[in-house]
Length: 200
Image (cartoon, rainbow, N blue to C red; front, side, top):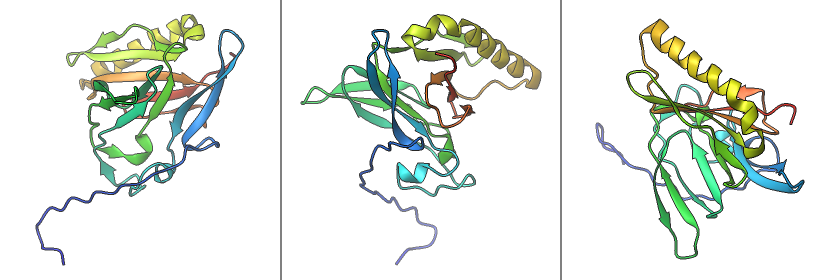
């Protein structure tokens, strides 16, 4: 029996699979600078694939704050909606990375990439607005030099909209991540936008 005007906490322990298809949290691949095929993981939650990743009410009107933590190989780096606030080394050598909580948002805006640190990186941060929002563009290291124009456009666009609406972007960072084999042309994840890598 539930008591009115009482807050309850529900804890659910679950396990899920990494998909081979381009939805939810899925396995992806790329060719590195040596011509080798390597794997990384990325996400595509829109419109209703978050339910394949975690227990949730997967409807846009239902929103939540997400506190993400990722256990990963030390040779990999995770990226998500928030910034990594701390890391711990586990007894088996793996790392657990804890992200800052998101703002309240719909499940389809949740994003996660886990990729080899040697092959994925970001251009240097550019700071925008009075809230010092970090604007950055990320992708495979062997195409970063091709992303400088995208970096400039991302920075100037955020600067323009901050000024035009007289409202600063509410998150501490906005990341634009080029992903090969992305389920759509682009995705407006809160704090970490994804877009398809073309022509490489």
